[in-house]
Image (cartoon, rainbow, N blue to C red; front, side):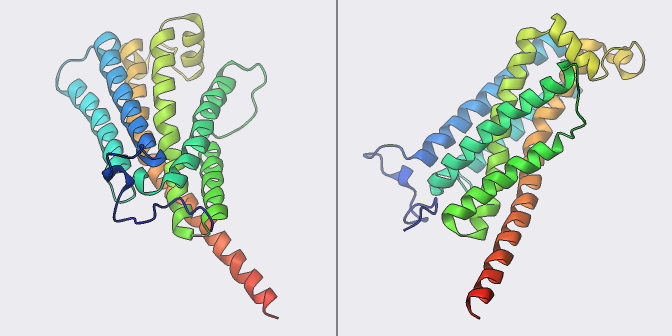
Length: 247
């Protein structure tokens, strides 16, 4: 019987049995909680040390990031597609999502520090890894709905990991030569425009806040779209094979 990534009785989570070991999906849900807590803490720390806009707009930006992280935790642990209900999918999504996160950091670094830069739009990294996650789930479960869910969770889990890595790397290296090189290559170098109005540190940190707030939303939307496309190709391919076999 293939591993569909679903618990035997979807209406009864394995997490409801306190006597048994915590299943993979529930464990990964708790890891999401830890990642979201880390991302929220790093944002608050960066806000206090680098942004220092303690008025209404600054508070609203920080609250928006923390709210998105909280919604991520709710989706992973309490939502209808919570990870405890799809442990196999959760394991595969975490693996591909982890590769996505590490690769995303490497792509950003390569585009900034490499002497030879190749033309590559980072959005294709999102699309490619979401497709891998969805295709893997389809190969295991044979269900197009699971393929869509897997593509979305792959990017969401990967984004949670990337956010922790990216915030940590920026806060640890803040003001160093590599940090200045990266952000200079990102366009944060001149003395005019919005940089002059808010200052370098605040400008960069607000850029980070925007990325951490928007990436999970982008991951859900883009992952779902890619999952639908991959599942559509899979369903069409299966139909063609069925017709060919029936001749």
